[in-house]
Length: 404
Image (cartoon, rainbow, N blue to C red; front, side, top):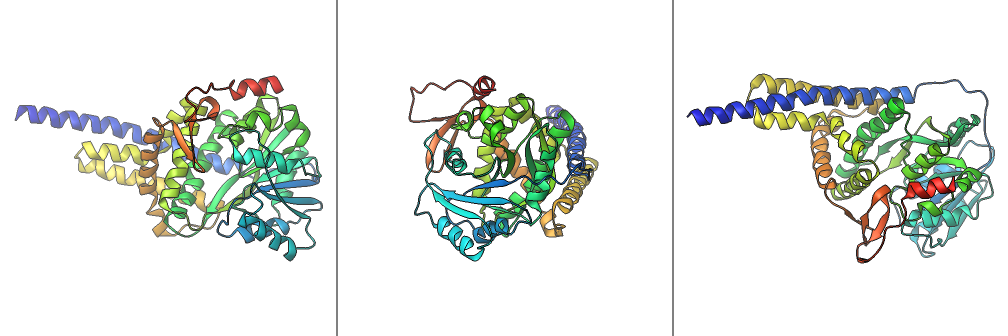
């Protein structure tokens, strides 16, 4: 009996220790959510900066809503721009959809291209390099195929480049789409992703660029070595943003929130995507990856509840989860339409799922990307797993330093 009491007391003590981490995690999460509002706060601009822009739009396959995604870029309220849509395979179904957008919007300058350069293991970088060879303008904007933008997107984003110290502009992302996988993605984009990237910017001034939207000058990219240093990295967007900062440029975040269309996503697709992202972030910054645990108070509350059988602790835990869900709802409402109650009830389960993905990502080192199994090395450099004798090339940061 005494031994059982000692075990019970030990479990209770562990529960209280875990519960101490919960309010710390909740406070950090609330700070991250507040950072989103700070990043998107109104600010005065010195001029109406509208340089000519070439939009590079890599596509692959028939994504749900692809026609409307592409058409939204053909309807931009912007004085001079062109839209280059390209796929690696000339038979790709997405190119026919792009040609239909081209026919339906004769006033827009749209070119549909195929073929990629063989630079390295990142197919997106290979395709972007080929598209940029056809660009008519100095300013390049990268936009993924699932991005759907309002007519003011280019104007609002380009305005940030009126500051000559700004070398790259990116945007905060929100998601839309039906289905459980899409709901999980939409909730995560508007809570963890938006909060973590905004907190990094407000707290440390670090660039945390997400490649859904990146605007920069071609001459600045060339100074950094062009596409070559990014040819075989998984996180080409993050590395590109960091390279701009290392070269002395400022990375700005536009107040314009872009939308990604995630219709038809399954839970499996959500898990696979974020497992790949978790491994990538671990290789980019192990310390920051470990710190991500402080942005998941639901994890600590649930852990405490499993070992501490105290009604008061359970009540406090439930209150903490409610506060976290309410904070997520406020950010969701700032970034897009207000969420429904049924959607908010999914948040704790999504956070626990993300915690499990984090645990797996902390130890796993390979990804299956478009049918190719690859190992992730330092700075998210990719090495084919079957090449057991492959020597990882010099780190990406070293190449960027040399190019700068």
